[in-house]
Image (cartoon, rainbow, N blue to C red):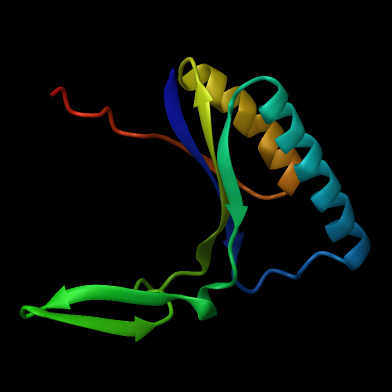
Length: 118
């Protein structure tokens, strides 16, 4: 079975959901997580703190540098993710269609690269 990343994108500047809507989203996501576990598709998942909490580490001119916040200037950021097991892309897309309803945000689907043969 292949593994896929289902990533949730948050758009900076969008009005945050009301507390009531947020509670419903949490409940819907937990129900989705329970279904992933029950059907054997769950690998792991997590929500992320906002981009302002990020630290970027990179090499420049042979030195390791750390900077606050995301390197790319964008209004769309990774808000959370699932790593799932699915037979193929169609199955992963079916899971993503449920994920986007649960979290009420766009969900990108990307396969992991195959492990190199030994």
